[in-house]
Length: 252
Image (tube, rainbow, N blue to C red):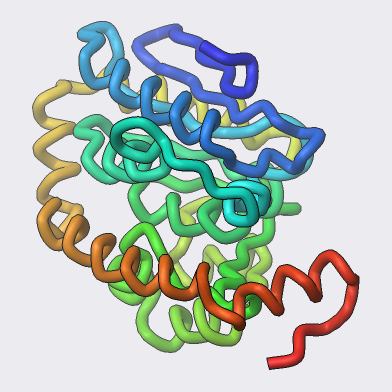
């Protein structure tokens, strides 16, 4: 497995650590592919009962690597980002996330497919899609309102509000906040505890609690994907990127 994703297996837990700190753990094609492969492996390994996802450095992830948007390439087969979203949304075993710093864009929306999300006090949550001329993705337009209600969802997805860890806890986006230095160890304790439970009971409980079907999630991703692709080709997105690199406000 590439060093951009550290994979460790111990006590029936697969620990996945995003390891691209020099770029704030931005997700690119290679990282999406590595995550998709690891999640698929977790499903087929009978010794794995839970997944713990975290990151190195002081950022969980700054979101999608802009270079993938600016310089798109045609991938052979299913695009890696689609493979990742399918893997994380359809994973049968519990996924525990330790958000060790800012979770931006897909760093926030991927959390909606996970089961227990814990954050450090320094974590921040933001979905700045409208600020760059884009729209929600990863079925977040379906799952976020279900998780936190329309009021919080609109504040996050349309206004682009940044939430502190305590605000995210109040909204119901995450379930616990830990001191920065204790986050991973405390999250690992939960992962190991969950991994020790009756596996089919855990899987069935996850399926019942989820509340939406795989088909609903897939359909929403498809609807979002069509509009997202249109916006990527739009003048709004081009102006957003130009403004970002020119360090100025966009002119819409």
